Amino acid sequence: MKKLLGKRLAYLYSGELFSIITFVPVSYLLNYAYPHLQLYSLYSFWVSFILLEFLLLQGTIYWYAKLKRLRNENNPITPIKVVQQLHRLKTVNMVMIMTTIIVFIFDFIKWYPSLPLGGLTITFFIYIFAILEFINYFYIQLSYDNVSDIKKLLKSKKLKNSCMNKDFKRIKKLEL
Image (cartoon, rainbow, N blue to C red; front, side, top):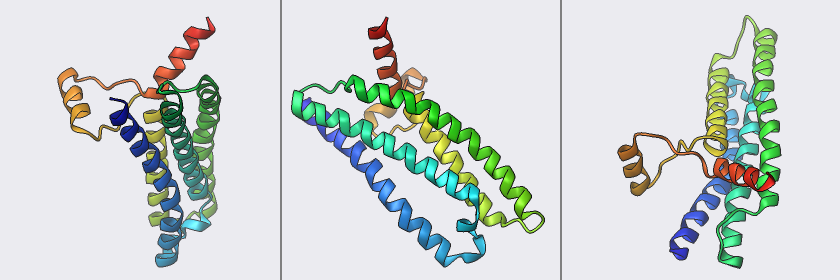
């Protein structure tokens, strides 16, 4: 069981880290190959992209902390300090999500009437992806990437609380 859980945590940790690293050159190549999109000229792109990368970094740290604890202490429970830090970052994330809306409005005003619609569309999808990542990490598990999780989902017909959300509830009980 420990070995299987270790593999799962390593998969989650490395997947998030790979995404962080990969998205940077992909965005550069996209901007370079399609300059008419004007991605790097859009403030909303930068704020959305940084938000997404920041969320992925939080996911990486979370899964790595669980993996490290499992390997070192034979215990997969997330360290309280990590959970507390992530709980504080939840507010920062929400502020960034709201700020991005303001930045989109600014870009619309700045670029009107010659809006780079292709770039704004890509930026909007990055923003939506970031919001979905936020929900997936902090509230409800949206990602089901193995057969047993999918079977449980189909059987229960109900989305699960995210692991981080369960940890937030755990430390809240400890504080009472």
